[in-house]
Image: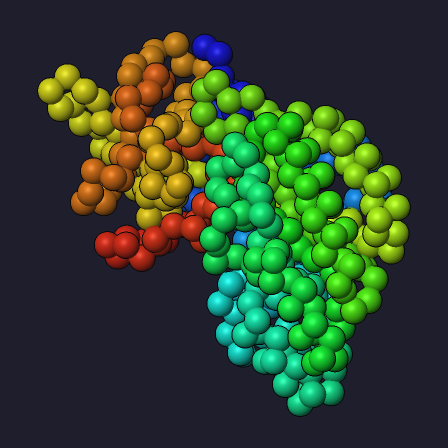
Length: 407
């Protein structure tokens, strides 16, 4: 059997997949039962090392903790990256708890509440402003607290990141301020006396095409350089976003990171001419943590229905919405899945893995070639380190939640 590429980075010990060097059956006992997510810290470290080797040293690497906000994961990443990016007041508390310098934390997201904006000012972090509404709220908070208000403008660009899984910029969007409205926002920042630091331009996510990412990087730098002409002070930071994708499905190829790194060297050289004081930031989430995690559920029933095998587990879409195909997939495709305690078994069958919920949407694998499994066996879903538990409707139908462990 040829294991899916996503599975190959995890060792096989005594016929079982091992996460962090621990066989899945032993890990299940260590965690205290199923279902659970497990994240391999050595793979997290290796992924950052890969990027450090490929990207120019002038690029600052930030972790977008919305991809996986488990406190232990964020604390581990804090020791590897240059900054943390948050998307809520709750995530901000997780980031601050790691001991990361607040000057290296930024806050983006539409619909920030007044309490969140005040929290951000009090913390001394950089706020990526996404609407004109935020500016006077921030100014009032700064005056009341007697603290400077560090701001950058999130720009909704006039272009899109081609081939991205989710397009976060270009056209009408709830994210950021339209590029053509940025001069007015800069003038408002000047009048309110806020501490302007730069721009945040995030075009899209989950992109596997290096050429598309490189094009977006070039256009983002060009846009920022034009907009900087109206800025009240020279740019200190330019967050170029990320969008680096990981392969989930058969036929997908891993992103050519060295090609992106080579292009970023050109971006750095160009920025030294047009934005000489600006720190360049690449903000990544899924790419840093996605491939380092697995989701594990136990088979509780084996059913045969009109010639088809169904393996019913104690986990499902309420823990892993993305693997069920209900988190952004237009056409459902199977995540890479294995019977984790029978990796080397030669007894195979076509089976579907389904959860315990009363909906046909609760499917983790649809008619996949798997090792023949029985109740008690452990189903492992790969590529599960990002947008897993916290991106899922965990309270749906009242089933127990899933555990998490960093191994």
